[in-house]
Length: 328
Image 1 (cartoon, rainbow, N blue to C red):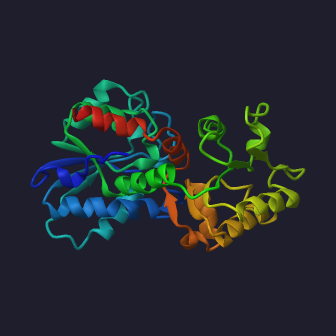
Image 2 (image 1 turned 45 degrees about the vertical axis):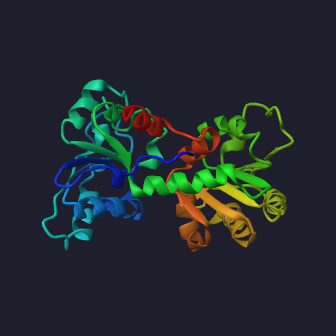
Image 3 (image 1 turned 135 degrees about the horizontal axis):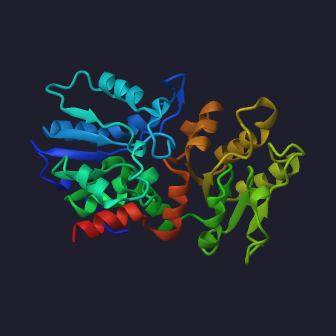
């Protein structure tokens, strides 16, 4: 992909910058239990602060449905950000409350995009994981402000462009989890991949075979539907070990439960044991790898599973096109 506009291209010194991050973090009893997405935003925030910019951060958390839901407030994230940046001299940073509390965000209403744009002189998108969404804070704001991408976003595009354009073959795509929209990407990726392995809840959601079904191998599930069978684990393992590139999005079962984690754990171990270049995407997949202490053995962890798949299929995203179009 051609070079994208970077935060470092903009004259942001002493200016106000609107930064879109992805702080859709897991919470438990009002506390953030995994700070990965916060950590990923720090290089861009630190760069902006070093340039003496005032940083206004906008993000979302969960699916409040356009209503104020106290349990989905970004305040726990704000507390962590404040603690991480406490030693910055003359710190100028503000985190706006959950964008999805306003129904206009997901409806991509121009009035909301304008309100947000009026807060700043520049817009930076560092939220790769939601840039497949046509929401006001992703595709609306770049119509009204000079725009560019944050450092984490640019890293995602760099790595995934390399995988897309110059992969080591054969390419194995492993899909799991419970989100049916992953199945929609299969036909878009059939010409690119060599094999697609399907587990998780997806085998129950499939509606008939795909045109090139020789490439698509669907796992059998245990009677309770919570994990793939041992036979499927072994079948998938034989393909994984021969792969040159592995892209994995979605666990093979209910890995949180001890009796239903074997498929995800053994597939993860097979991937780690292969010589392939290994890319995984999505919060559940990363959480499973973290649970099994394997996440540091993956070559690259993308922040978004569905977004990663869409980028690999299309080579772009609505959020990318919005910034490119807005800068013309």
